[in-house]
Picture 1 (cartoon, rainbow, N blue to C red):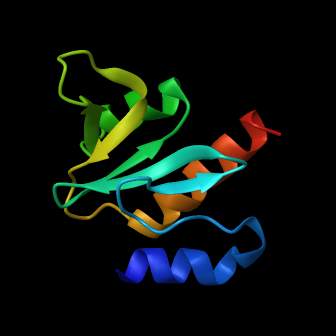
Picture 2 (picture 1 turned 90 degrees about the vertical axis):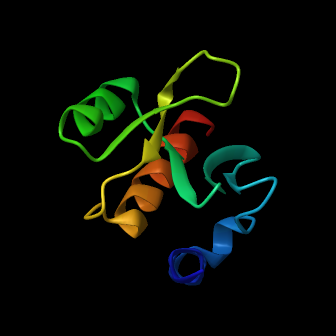
Length: 97
């Protein structure tokens, strides 16, 4: 997947994992995953709310009916995936340092 390849090329030192069942991690913490053809990223809850309001995505529902306020399911066709993945990486890296 191009977004993973581009992201990993610029962050080799943090050794994130590829998308899959475990998603991408930094400092052992998940910051992005790809599920059912959709990108899901972890961001500040205020940022998620802003992105939802602007039509970029919706709060992530892992399937048990409880929305996760710090996770965004990217649904907007013009969303910039690589930028969102980088932002999620920075957010989780800072929080887990």
